[in-house]
Length: 149
Image (cartoon, rainbow, N blue to C red; front, side, top):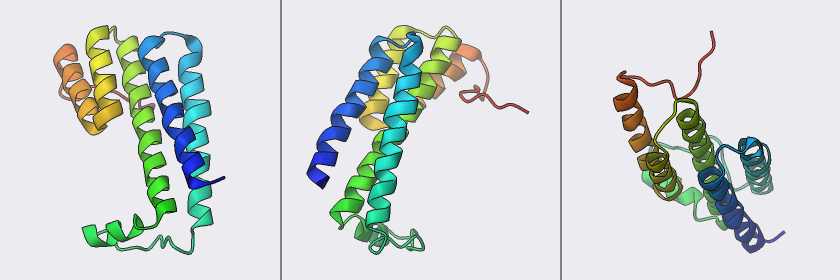
């Protein structure tokens, strides 16, 4: 499959996931489809791109300089892999904040704002949600991810 084809599939698929999180967050199948289908498919595409370009990707690349990192993205396949990485992880964060908000009776309008910001600006949407959870729960560290001992 061509890089253009992969790109043209992943963008709309991510959009489907975000539309589901925003419009039908309470539907039982939303989190299952977003995580077990879309995110897993993105992970498989990412793995395929990395494996197909392993000669161009050195896992020991010096990640301590912007120049070294930018060299990785000169390769279009690795650039696409980076884009898919971004799409997958933003969806995971979107899923986490959606489930946390539903579990804690969060404000649905604020949730949509945070979801949209996470979709468009990743960490900014998460940060807004995190700050709002601190304010609502009156705790310095809201448990967005449930940690089991």
